[in-house]
Amino acid sequence: MSGIAVTMCLCRRMPFTRLLPLARDRNWTLEDVIRETGCGDQCGLCRPYVRRMLLTGETTFTELLAE
Ligand code: FES
Image 1 (cartoon, rainbow, N blue to C red):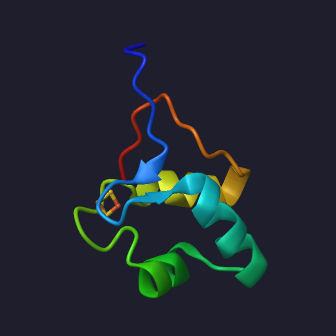
Image 2: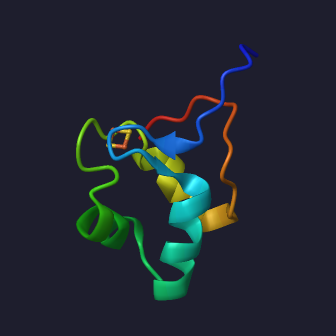
């Protein structure tokens, strides 16, 4: 393990700790998150993390996730 953690959408500078409560309040799917916040709409690298966050409520990821 490299010790690097993924904790935000870098392109939108949106921490997952901020994104998760927004998404939970509004019952957003991944597609809703992308449309409403732009997270996942640029480089797309955060998309699998956002998807996992919505499923499990995790906001810090130390494994590499791909689509
Ligand atoms: S890190 Fe989220 S779109 Fe690039």
